[in-house]
Image (cartoon, rainbow, N blue to C red; front, side, top):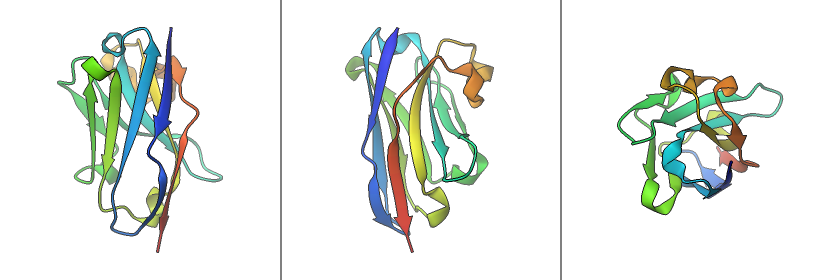
Length: 125
């Protein structure tokens, strides 16, 4: 079992940047594919990005491609989400999650076993 905890959220202006971190404890992070999801107020949780165990493969939501970058440092048991050119549409609670499932399942919430508590990202106009 692994526990994950997000940090780095906050309030930023349109066009600004934030870097979210996801620190893991328990089992080593390299055993898991990792993902970031977000949930805006009144909406369903949606996939944002995922990264394979070794970091060699990534998926992104189309609307964040070119703006967000997911990365991982297995030695530090940490996953990151660098978010640039933020817009108010990116406002949401962002969740980190760990998946023991096969890589193609990492774009769905059902593909994940462990979730963090979330960190709020608010982008103002």
